[in-house]
Length: 249
Image (cartoon, rainbow, N blue to C red):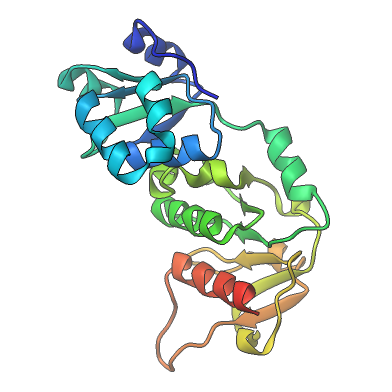
């Protein structure tokens, strides 16, 4: 849901910034609107250019953007965001409630897996995983540990697609039900398995792998095909391979 342009968009921004989700750039705003995010304020340094971009790349949200976007001076825009985006667009969205996400994650039967990132460290990797999960229609992405999956850098890496799936940070004991398939070099070759729709697909941290606590929840260890003497894949690459295998099986 969106509201008409605030007569004083900068005032609205400062009023909401501490609790809202920063949508950094045109594509993040486009995706958030497509998946029904509530966006109370959006700004651009050039309305004409941004609406032309919408005509070209996102005509489905062009009318909404026309109502929502407020043009602000370049200096004002740069004061709002830590890393100005090349498109000169930024917006604030209301974060989905934790209760709503928990209901989505708990709903059974599931038609797509839940992805679990066990104590991830890299904000950009987490964002890339959320973008992948949204693309594959995963039920949600859960992180354990200290990383906030709604950190602005994660949202930027996810291109606004946090609103296309359920994204939450949970303790291992709170993980959704379903058989846990954890990626590990010592596991069975994933190509020999069929991943069920209700699978919980768990991936260890970039440095340490799976935590002991999560290993205690694992039902199946699985491995990705990898050439000898290659130590590992990037986290997002591993998630992509596993989700593709699920989707193709």
